[in-house]
Amino acid sequence: MKSAKTPRLAWAITGSGHYLKECLELLESYEDVDLFLSRAAAEVLSMYGCDVRRLRERMTCFRDTTASAGPVGLFYKGHYDRLVIAPATSNSVAKMVWGISDSLVTNIYAQAGKCRIPSIVFACDTAPAMETEAPGGQVMVYPRRIDLENVERLRHFEYTRVVERFEDLVTALQESPAPGPSASVVAG
Ligand SMILES: Cc1cc2nc3c(=O)[nH]c(=O)nc-3n(C[C@H](O)[C@H](O)[C@H](O)COP(=O)(O)O)c2cc1C
Image (tube, rainbow, N blue to C red; front, top):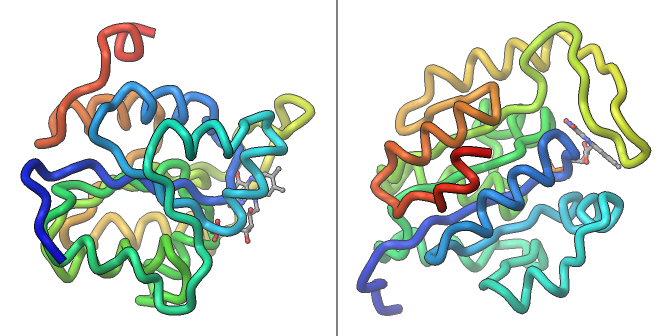
């Protein structure tokens, strides 16, 4: 496998509707981005009106179809200089915190860490009560103690930056070595 000339941004989406549209808009503002979808993300995206086929035409998009998470090999060869997981479900966060890598997204997080590639994780469950977007509109959710504790645990992981607000995700990306997003997304 050849290494990439210019490292790209790896962006993973998990099965959450939390700021999903905003995350999509932000990631689409990057030229050098490859997308990794959890199995749940592939389902949830269409529930929020996103055409996965259009995304796949627009960018390289890896689906979770293999047991060994084949695309992880790209992380060993310098294809990516940063991983973004946004939005990140409490399920994927829990697995990441406990060192489980049994899906595409949890695998690339683990491999990014082992390759010393920094990750930015936009966690969904960050407060005891919060408003989030369901397919039919805004709803209240009450993350459990275990969900909140796992987000706190993840903060202490090496090569990991946890962000709680979408604006903090935008800022973290601007500080990253990857090319920045377009001005309209930053301003919006
Ligand atoms: C419409 C919809 C919205 C969801 N939003 C969230 C969410 O905001 N946070 C969350 O932790 N799980 C959410 N889920 C549940 C996850 O999709 C589910 O836990 C799934 O197993 C996560 O798998 P993944 O972490 O591999 O993507 C949602 C599910 C649906 C159908």
